[in-house]
Length: 274
Image 1 (cartoon, rainbow, N blue to C red):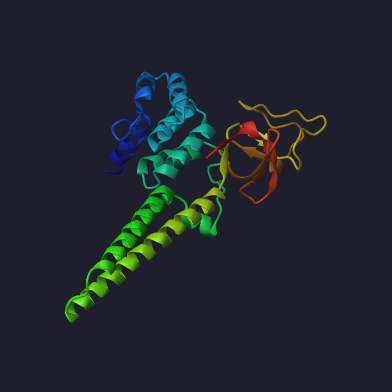
Image 2: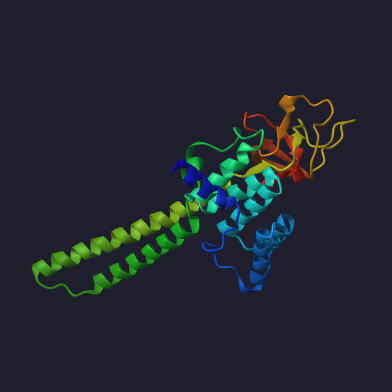
């Protein structure tokens, strides 16, 4: 039974997601089909280019990011695979396929046990649907106020009917207050989630500097496949797949906090946002 389950899970990396895909705009359908067909034919670079062009066009979906994670996984680009699996998980937090493939990608990097996320409130609200909360709260607030206004205009009748009217009026006010609170909660969640700016290291290894800019005599690590910068010790280098927190950016450099809590600067092209 366990062997069969593993085989089923392994097939998730063999084909891109199509059946459970989010609706793709008509203008991007052909590119999507080209990417899917290229993936099935084993032309993973072409598939990645197709899917990335869709993302560059402004389309965002968990399925798209899942497919991008799969293509980069097949290309052996674990940093990029982790980046897109993380993006997919943000939109589909309970999808077992995404979680499984993310774990597989992490297992193939030296950073498999590393990661960096904020704790406390940010962690608690991670993945909450801000738009759904806001629109739902707004709808409840509007419906409650309209119903309350209508009940206020109802002519009072006998005592029993009057008590019913008062109960319904109170219920309408409760609905309106609940809707308003939900709307405010959505705005708060949106702000808190904006604090969690994460990124993943896309290159083999990248040094962490105390200040932005290249130290004298120290070559800047390339942003494709790099070697450790000469003279940099292991404790000053981040490896591919490491998740960091972004704090600020300055002229091509990013100030980050690594999994150990150390703060420093790395070249921005070496990172991919999550």
